[in-house]
Length: 166
Image 1 (cartoon, one colour):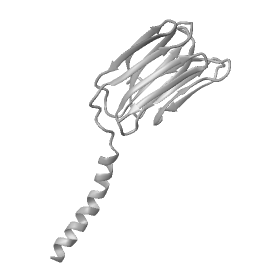
Image 2 (image 1 turned 90 degrees about the vertical axis):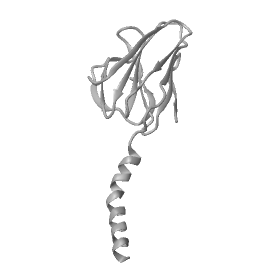
Image 3 (image 1 turned 60 degrees about the vertical axis):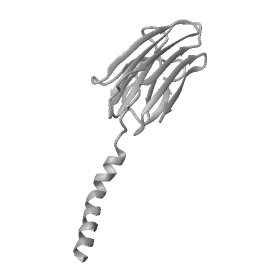
């Protein structure tokens, strides 16, 4: 009987690390990501949408000459270049897949489904005032949970984001 107890304890100790890695693994994405882009200003706005495998970095170049490379983190949020500046380039990793380019006029909205995203991914959206001026970029993921919705809105004060995880 004592041998059985020792074997059970040994198996529990050995499997502890394995179970932890299974629990921390990203969940399968069983539904598409419902993406919405909305333009609430009087000018045209261009949205570029990418699907990126994680982990990954994004490289930014600003209109004042500064540049840097940063990891795509967990969560969601827009990033702006600061007062009176724009991004001149937002480089996504080579592994990124372009989901779509959307050109929206004043008060227009577009809906798009991102089908079959890979396990452990992020959505990257660049928001352009014109073809050369990038006013914001958004990265979105739900860490280990499926991302089921993402809405990016350009308004007079900047860019806002709403997302949904399950």
